[in-house]
Length: 324
Length: 212
Image (cartoon, rainbow over all chains, first blue to last red; front, side, top):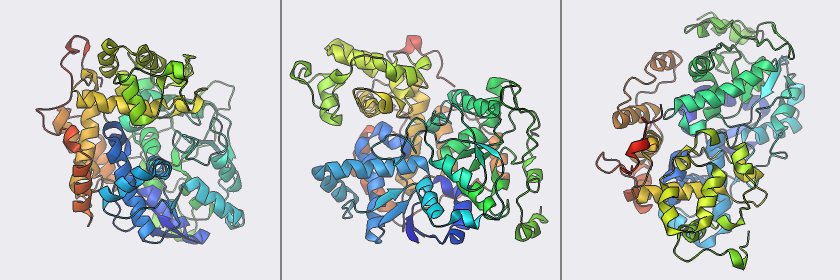
């Protein structure tokens, strides 16, 4: 399956392991990701907060470039980019005059033909095409599937069936051998774009998410958004200071979990790039005991040791591992 | 959603401009409070989400400044929880976007929101220059704007060790096209120079620092 691909800015920088893991699993799932030529930033929260026209024009240029390249569908792994692109498409389809004005503004013809697809939709399509049969190393862990905001809301632009208790990622996790938990913070906000300008706010909101996942006995939090990952993983120090507690639970991208299940090494899916070491100790506490499973996280520098601690490596990855 | 005749705003007042710009009528809200109940940041806000709508519903010229200088409109994360749960389908995040833009245009941004605004402006400035976000450039620009020079410095070596710190921006061929988009969209309302921050002077009394 050939499909358009818009990585977005985060996947070139702070979330490069999301891109690396997607690029690594794509061929195994018979997916060819074709990158939109010369794409720009979607404008993110900043644009729609300060200038509505700009918030339509920047995504429209991306959509128009995809359309010009003949893409019928465009996979957008970052939830925030997905939301901006899908919202723009939605609004410009409703308003012909606006569509024309924006097309003039971006200097490229734009009709709205290209559909926007998020990573969960793409992976569920792969599931229908025999993903389960390709699983070589079931990801046999209890996971808390964290959807956040933009995979589920607003309803008119997402394909999510249940906005308050979505099941798409849970279904996917079951397919690769994981046990998705029932928990309370699936669709709560992590604090998103306030990560830099109000870190304490983000530490509070993300802290509640991490704490509940730990309390339910999750061995990993699973995300499909670079911003969620940054706030739950890179901001773990701020979370721990805020809540006066230690949380060892790692945060994995959905594509990394699928990659591990397909037999890729931890390095191939980029686990070594995380801030919180990815390793799965025997679960110390069960839900109901009230004792959070925490405290075995090492301080900075532990990441290198984390590579190799898992059980998912095949021979190919093991060779690379020795370089560490 | 259509607007009942009894609930049309007075022409030229803030609610009517909200409606013109967003298509949303604040008069559809019947103050059930569900938006506030689900809002992750209601507790930090000066006016809760339903109160912002209530201030607008009063449709009084003297309430305009009250709404536009609210800190709440800058705290809103656009998480869309309120919109998803509103029984009257009021798109409050969309209204919040409009209120932010109006506050910025009129120089009424709450002083406590200056870091949030500085971040948004630094973000857009890096896009305007290079077409794509350059994270290192963004953080540097934000620090210079806010003088929070030491914030997050301990994260830098960790990011570097994980290969996530790209020091050189990844420019695109269509850089000039993106710059023209910014010009056409009227970035005149996006001041980047220190002289015109869009931040109001009138709330100096309750600024109590600038958040974190």
